Length: 352
Ligand code: TXA
Ligand code: MG
Image (cartoon, rainbow, N blue to C red; front, side):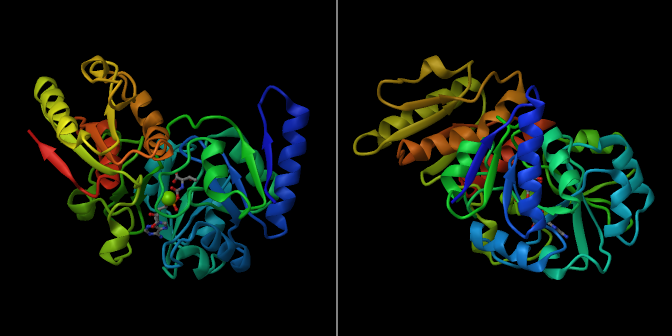
């Protein structure tokens, strides 16, 4: 059975009691899902190989896909990694705590079960208060991938975790909606030139503003892989996939709307169509015929990012067959939003 507890930082006595219970589960080698500022994580004691194995089982995740180790204080980093270079220092000073994961050469104490067999380890110092309290109180480093079933969109609310993993994990701490809603930006700082492996809320522009040089992993552009480990193509593709077939339509607003309407019309006959729209465009689509979901205001990409996974899950919930999604410009946060949308579509994109 999965214990589910809703906490708020207003009610401290209940929060402390819940954190104590969750910390005890982590110390005993169990699994606890918890909120972070990016997405919900599925946590286990990072230095306990048996506990870590349970994460892979619960998610149905291949065991060569490494986990992120979460710490609650910067002073803990040196226990996990063998080298912190100047670029790492710069990124840590600027962006930690926050939605940035860094890849370092690992120390021996990090088991290969956690690092997916690699000599490097991914580390993140989250900002979310509940996440940090849990790590601190458990007196452990917490390995945590996103708390979804492998292949589903990452969870941005406790109800998403419950839907995917209820009965498979010990506890879910419900701390409300996640602030950013996209998984952390990942930068590999294990060699001299930093490499962006996964785009996120710390944008390329933000990284370039503090680093002299940064490379973008080819595979982000090519087919959106989010790991440095070469994988079977089937794994790289369609990572954040709703059940529906997603098509992204990119271009000027007028052309985009016309194309989406004509495609919806074409598929309509025997299929359930979903349209992923924005405040600016929603009224152009027939909400009596189609499930029109609104991501938010185009001019506020923070909201778009925060709502994306929730909306993808909603299309599944309503059993939609085809989703037609509006595209976004691939600058700043739009780069990460489009990266996730492209994955959801298995790179099925129409450029007008
Ligand atoms: O925002 C986040 O990063 C969330 C929260 C819970 O912290 N976690 C998360 O974990 O998204 P996960 O496992 O869903 O994604 C981690 C990614 C995977 O694609 C994995 O392959 C990559 O990080 N990764 C982990 N360790 C790595 C390493 N040593 N080298 C290269 N990639 C690594
Ligand atoms: Mg994930």
